[in-house]
Length: 472
Length: 112
Image 1 (spheres, one colour):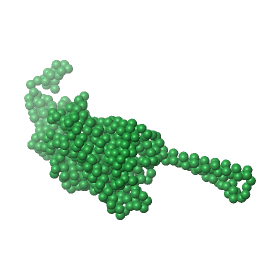
Image 2: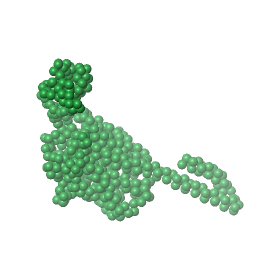
Image 3: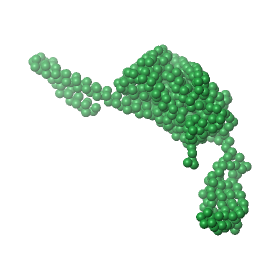
Image 4: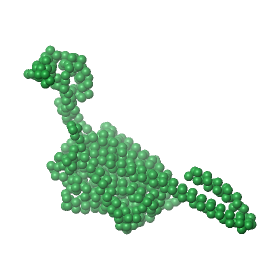
């Protein structure tokens, strides 16, 4: 780059002198020579522009491929370890397999039709079929979504979101769902709940799309698309399936806080790809999202810990890591729209709020959201989506055009209403879609383990394996 | 011959083992165990849910000794394992009819 710029400067000076001479009447020979020099100059400028664009594309693509890998890291091993440690040891492999299965199944579905349903041209609610089997998804950029990276990079990056979203739901029905029922339910869920929601928020022509949608709703990295859909569906799942046998009287404490701890820390790191990558380039907006992500996680970890310390008398490791995840969830929709100090506020609020949902609301109503997928993702996602409308500012992201306010901090109070509509739609599609699918799959293959299998654990009953055999 | 079974706090194992070696006891078997006496476990909290853990981790030392080593042995164990708090453990003593060294058929006190 630098060498090209110097070359360009050299050309300009050398060619500039004869160009000045143009002002004087010149012989036809001299004119022709000057014309040739101008052409050469134009070519040099064009070459420099191409080189510059290639360099930007290479830089953006490097960050986006890295981000895609980071988001996959969130599912396996991140979420698999986080959830795996929280269940009893007879269920660890079954629980980890539920996340891992999504890495396989959703990938195939995405290649066949998922990407098309989410990001193809369709109507307000769902994409079309033009990209079935990834037809037309090439190695050149699709400026509708990201102008500087190959569309295939965009496709694979979005796939990683589609993988983790159904995997998050598994926390609600932990320790009691058949592998077959789980696999069919979550496959259908990914096509019939996730894809429409992703299309509405991010797809071209989507109802809630921030740039040009009917109800422009801000969701930088998936607060509604990922966390509300998974969290609310999780609540529906645990209500539909019922409690685990013996809940809440039997001891069901986490079998390995160490695994959960490692998993939560991997989630935190992977979240940099999730949020910062959602800038879809490696520019300053990615930096802003990166910092907001980190700040919110830290503030929420401390918020939850303080709340727990006051409420229960001791700060716990599980509280601290749960708080961090709650903060990461809440900052997700806001990460590319808010100032760092707002991120601290969003994080702290999420830490307190999710603590309240998990400690107070869950025990008051008595549902068995086993690993708190709703209490953290549903509640944190809803809070985050609404706070995005409050804290979003054009100083970070002029999403609605230069000079136009983004959120309530800019005086654009109507955005909070738009956010609320986005939240309401995400809740509705999750409740209805999940209920219908659960009912259908229950009739088809059954969802709930037999009492015998539940007592034996997922590992033996579903996979004929054991997670730990320390005598072998 | 006597069998000494001592149930101890896991954290005291190393100190007790050293004290027994110093007292001239050469062989021992150590088992990892779980259990409770009158102390009845403790409570743990996970996301606000309270669990009572009534079987606590313990170690059990088994020794077979000559009768004349009895007081030395008990002194070594009690002297190092006692903290004065509930949960320090217990010692059980019983008589052994015979002992056999599998390698060479030695019997009785020669085998221990």
